[in-house]
Image (cartoon, rainbow, N blue to C red; front, side, top):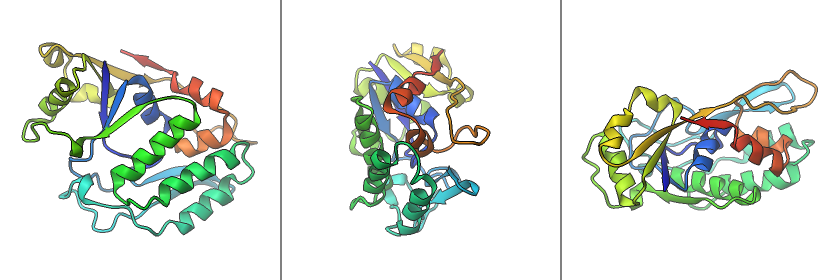
Length: 229
């Protein structure tokens, strides 16, 4: 079984979803320190005026707190209006905007819950079945090193392959995992390009942009545009 583990990000770029796609089980890593000034609670979309960043506030955000200790603000009306204004004429707006709204208006405001809701609804819309769990709800040794925590999570689910984002090459060695009976693989995203209207293509925007402009069949193809090395 292939296992992937990643901190929760709100409507991230397609490379994040390729990581989910590559795994049989995706663990939302919400019992680690929050990442401030990153893309956890924000991303870029394409508005009529050009690239625009949306941000959902996280009250009390601090890198001294865990993801599971924090929640998204309920103040999302302006963000929803921005997304609606940006994509109201997009080909798949009527299908995708409700997915965005349901996630952003979820009663459970925890970061992991809202991100998980968006992941589940997106893959359901694409006709793909994926399994998700939060690490905060699991029993394993949280006092171990970052590497050994991942290995422990693999053992917890009898995973014989751990799939990581390409940036993990700087952090983890294949030999260390192999000694524990686990194959370490990295997802290398290949170029993804689609029509965004009468403009030059802008890559790596939020998955919202991909979903708004592309059919489910096209998005599923883009999810497979990676190398597992």
